[in-house]
Amino acid sequence: MRPMIASALTMTDTTLTPSRLWKLMTAEQRLRAAQALWHEDEARDDQAQAVSLIAQQKKFRPKTVSALDTDRKARYLATVSNVPEALAARLLVLYHLSEQRPMMRAFLDALGLANDDGLIAEDAVAPDPAKIPAAASAIARDYPAHDVALYLNTLLWQDPASWGALQGLSELGLS
Image 1 (tube, rainbow, N blue to C red):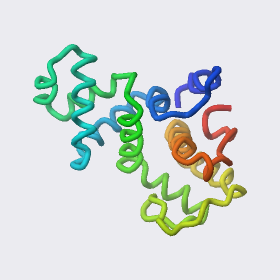
Image 2: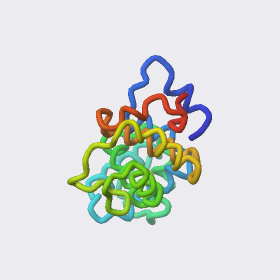
Image 3: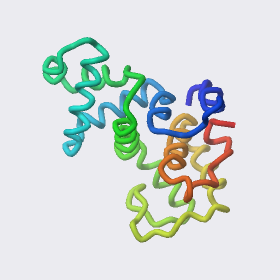
């Protein structure tokens, strides 16, 4: 992640939220997340919310935004810094599912968790907290730091009880 991530999340309130993670994503990560949104057939409600957000931000009519090609809508959405929590959450999930499956699979495999191409199997047990630091280090050696930090912070936001052992790791980009 960008160097400012450490200072941005070490201010008074360090609660991880999807919108804060969105703000800390690189421009390329945001663009790829936005592209994933526009290519997801089952995200029509989120796409409509994104159209409204872009229209408000760019001072366009929603109909004008709807008529734009997918690439332009993605580029516009990637520039919006204040994204509602639900939309930011959807963007984070879609980004990881469309762009980061190999890293997700490598992390879960390092933990010994059953997974389907990076998705935790429904019958999988909770991760062993003792294995989490080594698994985080393993993916940090093979993947870009900003991608690793975003993924691990996303896990921590989604399920702090299961992923609490991530807290304080240098791979989060927060220490």
